[in-house]
Amino acid sequence: MGSLDFHHVPEKTNSDPPMANPMDPEEFRRQGHIMIDFIADYYKNIEKYPVLSQVQPGYLKKRLPESAPYNPEPIETILQDVQDHIVPGITHWQSPSYFAYFPSSGSIAGFLGEMLSTGFNVVGFNWMSSPAATELESIVMDWLGDMLQLPKSFLFSGNGGGVLQGTTCEAIVCTMAAARDQMLSRIGKDNIGKLVVYGSDQTHSALKKASQIVGIHPNNFRAIKTTKSTEFALSPELLRSTICSDIDKGLVPLFLCATMGTTATTSVDPLRGLCDVAKDYDLWVHVDAAYAGSICICPEFRHFIEGVDGANSFSFNAHKWFFTTLDCCCLWVKNPTALINSLSTNPEFLRNKASDSKQVVDYKDWQVALSRRFRALKLWLVLRSYGVANLRSFLRSHVKMAEVFEKLVRENKWFEVVVPRNFAMVCFRISPSAIRKAPTDDDGIDVVINEVNSKLLEAMNTSGSVYMTHAVVGGMYVLRCAIGATMTEEKHVLMAWKVVQDQAEAILSTYH
Image 1 (tube, rainbow, N blue to C red):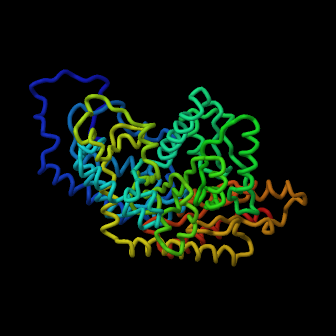
Image 2 (cartoon, rainbow, N blue to C red; image 1 turned 60 degrees about the vertical axis):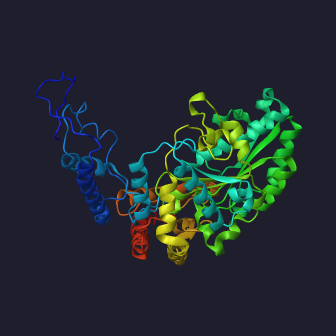
Image 3 (cartoon, one colour; image 1 turned 90 degrees about the vertical axis):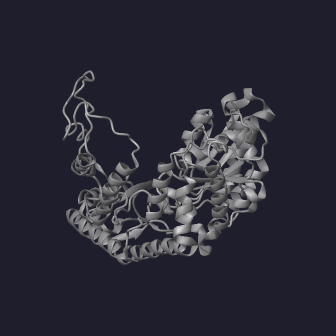
């Protein structure tokens, strides 16, 4: 590295280098070109890297100095260190062979929108602090709501409204806080210990974290069991019986999180039936469509959120499968006043005529933090640069590639598809029938087949050729092939399947 291992900061001397302005436009232009070239080359060569980082914990501390440099270093030296020391420790989420978790898809428009937002570096906590930041966000959220065919009651044009949060967890915290305060205003704040939150055993852990943050008693969090017979979706009948049991105990049902596209299997909770139950007991219903919500801009997938008119809030992550880069969670609410009542503060230093007029949106009152980024710019650039038609085509191409992978799995006698595919993720595993040396009892074969699939995943990921992750549902260890990286093409899917087959053949040979 170009820096020394200083353990103290020496006093300034006359020989110190002259200080350059950190925002000199011409130097920014020069370094900016270097940075763009570096990133472009990274994407040009991304397939040369192992998808899953192969470093060991603590690797970076051994490579970097113990303290920051006293004198400045050139961008060229810093980027060389990025290449030599940082890139090896990156798991390449944008690799075309990345099939793990859910995608975090990027795009040129998303990157440039992020650059523009960072370049302006505004802090848009209220309308006055940057009117364009607030107004563009409101406009873009209505555009996107129209693309999803959300009920007008969720849009600003229908007295609802949308806001860009960082993550789904933030969206759930905010909506749950609003639901909590609405309920406590009726039953009294001393009864917070009676409030109950509902989800399924497939609901994202963000719901439990939000419950903890909002102050729900740990004993009042319900993760209702799902089964393979319902494709691991939440049953309205079980929800109703659970609610009735809680009411009999003197508890107060508060909040339901229904999911469109669960993390483990992309199962879809039946919104219409769940909302009907929730309406009978006055629950706030939030729809978490973090992964799959984006596909609903395609008319043939819109049916997956039928019944959303019965919900109170809806969110999806544009940074997952909508080419907009982290972080960008889109949240719509029917009753913005409920959010504002729970989350607003009005210190004197933020007072201004526009806010006092109640004619503008102050997004600080729609979120936990005061400061906020100009996220709307990158979403606006994505929508304008690609248009609805191309965005639909991109998403459909991922679904078609998932269909190809699913077909290959079904045609191979060693494997089985564990749950029906809804979108662009295939849940599969080596089938118990592929194991010749298998225990005869059910418990024994379950242990062995889970072990085999765990070994398969480890072998695939260690190879560096692909990266997939797993889930455990109904006691089954399943592999998840989530297609959605922007650069993925069918050839990468076919290659991934070859890796699966080759590694499975080696593992199964020890069980024959």
